[in-house]
Image (cartoon, rainbow, N blue to C red):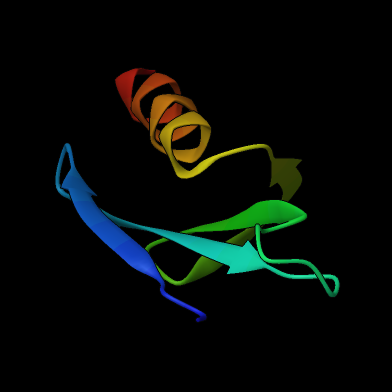
Length: 58
């Protein structure tokens, strides 16, 4: 299953996308904020949303 998770954080659309490498669980998660891809990998969707909250506070 390739389920993208989206949330609105401080007016921005944040997407967390799982990336699978042959296993049942995602190998890592990618992130986009307002359709702009962030060149960093994350261990979970929760980590993606924490990162986005910190970025949007500045």
